[in-house]
Image (cartoon, rainbow, N blue to C red; front, side, top):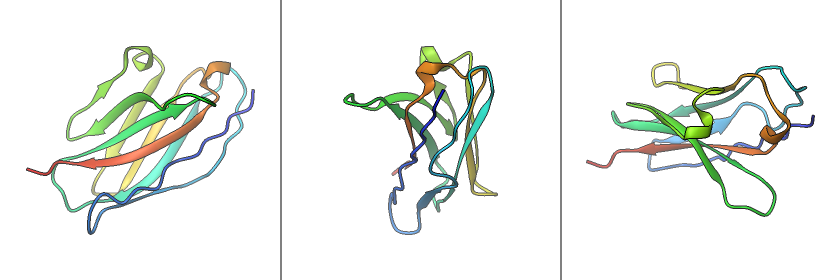
Amino acid sequence: VRWVFNLLFTAISAGDEIQQKESSLLKEEGQSVSLECTFSTTSTGYWIHWYRQYPGTAPQFILFSGSNSYSAEFAKERFSSNADKASGEASLSISRVQLEDSAVYYCFCGVATW
């Protein structure tokens, strides 16, 4: 099983930023993996969104976490996320990886504008 992870670098507004910790990971089926990105935001309402993309397709929403959280139906059993503003760290954990988990993964920091 070959995993290729590519996390999107996105600046949302002045003072907000997000960066990946690694650009690619290799895992075998059945193992667990954690993808990490660091972020900083001045907003009190923030969400770290995770998407995955297969070649030739649009990005697929996995989940978001932060001020609150929500997961796509397919992600509820094996995917989980943590986002901590104080430490500036966010992670996406995937348990019991499967061949179909091999994709490009993106993290994105969204903030409330109210």
